[in-house]
Length: 56
Picture 1 (cartoon, rainbow, N blue to C red):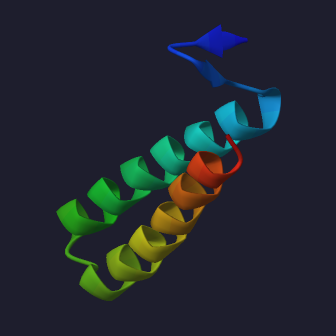
Picture 2 (picture 1 turned 180 degrees about the vertical axis):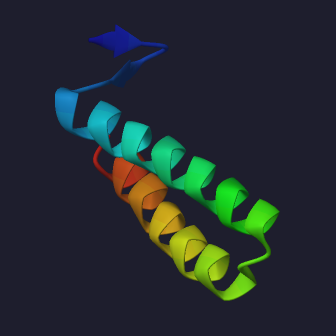
């Protein structure tokens, strides 16, 4: 699918979806006061988002 001159595939859309899912996990952990767990999940979320961008 072409959007704004970028070619989106199922792979990078799935990686962006994973990044959003992990971001919700970060928010959930922060609300529970688990800052270390939120930091770990944030790193995983950043890696998933970066992989989605690089997969374009």
